[in-house]
Amino acid sequence: MSDKNILVTQEIGSFRKPEYLSRTFHKIEGKPEFKDVAGKASLETLKLFSDSGMINHGIAGEMFRWEMYEYLARKIKNIEFHGKVRSFDNRYYNKGSVSGEISLMESPHSEELEFILNHTDAPLKIPVTGPYTMADWSFNDHYGSRLELANAFADLIRGEIENIQGIWKKYRGNEIMQVQIDEPAATTHPSEMDIVIESVNRSVQGIAGLETSIHVCYSKDYRVLYDRLPDLHLDGLNLEYSNRDILQLGTGVSARPGFSDLSYFSQINESLNVPKFLGVGVTDVHIDTVESVELIADRIREALRYVENPELVRLNPDCGLRTRSREIGFKKLKNMSTAREIVMGEL
Image 1 (spheres, rainbow, N blue to C red):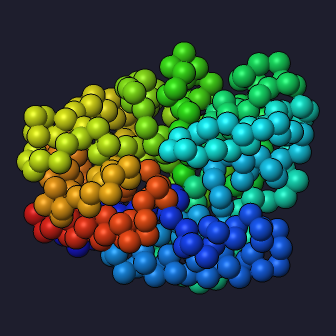
Image 2 (image 1 turned 90 degrees about the horizontal axis):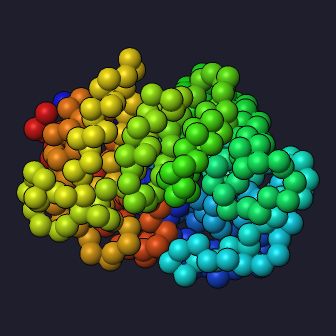
């Protein structure tokens, strides 16, 4: 097999910015020169992705975005900011307080998407911060409940997806637009999975011509998400597995402990009328070690032991590679693409 619709390689969202952009980002954001600088970085990243052999180029590593929460929150009416909180990896963001009915003041994604569509014909996937994470990472000083707040974010996000779909159609016609709902908070409060599912479903409800997925970058127990697969009205999931795995070669539970819960996923997924695809994290974004082609190939083989239909398996880093240098990120993507070719030759 050589079909590029099988074992699709994809960047999961963010990629390390070149120093000339990261150093000046906050100084030039909102100014005329920002588009030129972020655009230059986007073109360099698109070339890097192409040179790595990766099939789906995401949105060129999110060069137009600093991070996932505040980037969106700053463009929403009635969110007030009171100070910084820590997210992860010594990264900080200004946490907002929702003080009234929320609505978008401007599109967060239009300029970025239009630029990328003007410069590549490669397959793309557009990450959008999800409604539950926006709600969970905000203070609620207006809405009557966390569900009401999450659904308000869902309505706002659905409107933005409809907006960028209009831009997409100008360049790609009736080609399906891929949207990834980023929900790092999804499994952090297992008792709130009803809120997660309702708000995520609501964010894409009624929009035709989409392929939709959820990205949950890390989880203590993905089984709380797997249990809700029948209720999740999305086409697929993009998840992390390599961060909990080990670096020895081989397949099987002892060699690939990070992938063991795929047995549970597969049992539920196979019971669905329409099974969902799974984006499998096959390289760890929290270490500089560049996993060998052989190790990544073993991880792919292990995923295929559980999800036997290769059309339902996609390959990605665990999360965005912004935590690594661009050089390390490229090597990880290159090895992932090479490993994919080896496994494709075995199918």
